[in-house]
Length: 242
Length: 248
Image (tube, rainbow over all chains, first blue to last red; front, side):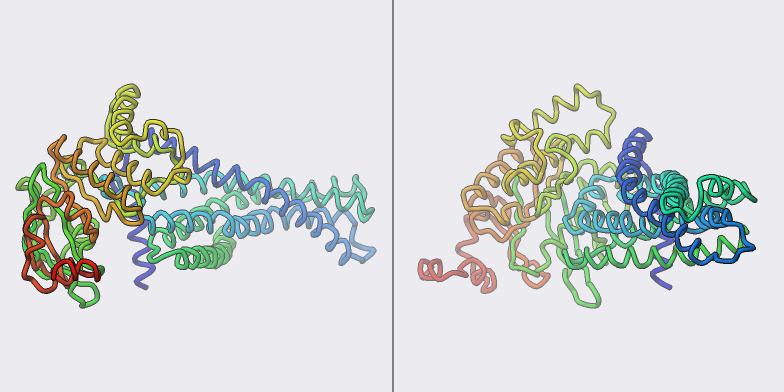
């Protein structure tokens, strides 16, 4: 309980005495590149292959002659939009971005760089963490949209190249029974997950004490706790919004 | 002038500082010496506001750091320059950006003014040529000098140095000590140095305080320290065989 209390106090300090807006803008742009742009490659690889595998495995399980083959594409689309793109992408990002944030802040803590900021009278948590949180909340939804697109594209490529579904059936399937609200739901998830990953990882890194071993430990805890919080939040969002 | 009175601090019930009082003069290099684990760094952290003491006061020209409003505390902070043990340079910034950082964050100076000030400080520590290099590309001694440049860039009234010689060879240590002393006298700064380096004590120790197990055991100047009759200080000073034989 005390850790949860400390976490919320830490969140409060992010919005304490701040610096000049120009400073935050510059930091936000740096973090958008560090968190968002640098994650494009891993997101692209993971999403394309997950989409491809989803298509092949769904087709393998749909052997009934009364179910049209275009249903494979419909299932791939809904799986991508509702779960795979937002949740799996964010779990991948929890590993990549979360460990990066925790180890960066942990190293800054043990090498007295955070102390140096505080001695200068700078709100170190606001200066270092707030731009990371905002950048994650801005870039994660974009990465998830990109992921969903690539996932569906991966399914198309795998399905048509292996001959399990024709191009015509796939294109029909991904447009069939489309619910636009699902897109909104898909975008809400990474917004929430981005906040959780950035704040939990920052919290773990910011309060690191000791040396290199503890930085590694903070990094591992950041990823583990972020993944658990993503799964819990995923369930709660599904209950609340669907 | 900095005055500390009756500073005490305990961690998990263990007393690290036991009611320390002292005053540190302007334009002088004030040294706090003692063995490892005697509370030197904790005392420094109490003075610069990184660790809040359990009791006592820290006065900066009469302004009580822990019992004043936030604006006064902020203005005292901006009068401080701190050289951390490892330099505490920001890894993602060049030497020049590290030195300019306090100006970027805390002032509204023009780009030209900031560049001139950074160039002056780098020139003062002899690192003009390293301005565009990253901290990972420079030596330990150079990192300390960048740390000093960053500490003085805001024209501080108080300079704190936490073991400025640690990890440096004797020649570089002497150069760092001389640089700190020159800067202290040139800009009339109140400088406090935490060290256990005896060369520093003899070279630049104008006002020395000896800590032992969280208490102040001795205070004086470097010309007197060698004639001390405090057993703990004698043990600290003459810790190696050669010096013990010389003492005899």
